[in-house]
Image (tube, rainbow, N blue to C red; front, side, top):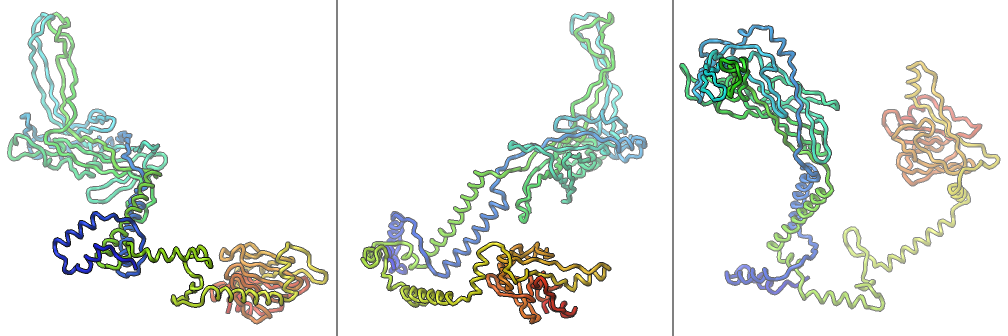
Length: 626
């Protein structure tokens, strides 16, 4: 055993009574001592169990990190582009209904709307109008306005004077101020098509479009290879964000109300919706780590707004373009009458997100390297624990000069003339039993082996002439039978199951298959005769024919044979052989006690021979292995 360093020996002997100063000196000495790695094998059960525990934890984590968390892939945030088009059939179907049937089309009073804006504009229950979708919708590259309310006013500009060369003071008169809700904008539908692109060459529609609802449920749409559009109504999109247009806006601010209390529904104030498109090609299910189906998760988020939310004011000029009495253009040559519409409505914007990745060699190598570093932590942790709980482990791990005596002894044995290059005396080398008990030395063992070889050689010399013929036949190819010996055949025995099936289907009794056995080695297995079951290998066993004898050699477990009509098949182990003759039976695959019995039962017959008659009950018993 190694002798521990001096500092440790002193610390170990006085560990229970070590003072503060001695402890500090020991720590300083351990800190400045150079330490290097040494492999130590120990049978300490505590350390072995600790190492297995930490190795299991860290290996499981490393496997989860690489495979389940897909750290072998290089990820990036994709760009999900949206193609949107309006589908107005359902909206047009409702156009013929009276607007008064809609609950928000009141027209008078303040039951639904009672609001004074920050700009001191007063709003009360509006009327309803039916507009064409082209009037109240506006599509941008990655957004959509669907307006739900507008205030319309007519402005007349009057510019007195005749001098067209100077600016003149003009007066404007506002008239016909009206508020109106758009009838049924939530019934307008959108056909949405998505395309996901990434810098590593990805450009395709998602295989699955999963729409998330506020209650946690989802709706899945499969665009397919043709990128079929997903159809969603404005009402569907609003409900996905948990918004009801007629519900009170919780974030609306204003100066107060006209009458009783402030009432400002989303239909008046407008709604800002952010449609988040989270795309991924990894499956979060830990049982499906290699599922790379491209999925886009759609969720709708409500973005609070404080004031009325809508696009820019639209201005329509309806008057003339000439000023003054002489009808000449001037510096103030503007339309004299205009109509202004201040809109508020639903604003839908699309935001790409998520992560898509591909297998990357460098990323995979980094992940594997990190895994090996983590696995090495198990050894480091156990080493530190072993040094704390076991002084013997410290002796084994840290080598000092005291162990050089053993090394010098080994060096002297290497130079011994009787066994140059061997670090020990071979006479002392002994075989160990299964119970780790030393037995005979290697010289005696070699002597016993040589005696066994000589015994085998003596037995081989006594092999009969017939065996030599089999050996010669197995070494050559097919040939002709010697004169006086008819060719041999394997003739199939029709199973009782086949006969019953033919009887039930009123068919003719099936003809048994015949396999010609030529002299020499012949491979038997699936495909020979009517043996087609995959339970039989294509190389199940070999048959070697010499005159009227057949040697059957099993290439795997499963074949069997029956000699001398004993009535029961015997299994033939892999690598074993048996010599058969005319009238004996072979079976390709024994299935003792299973439905259908053995597979491929054949009888060895010669050209003029006939199989011994066997009753149908005896045939069924043999087939079933009974």
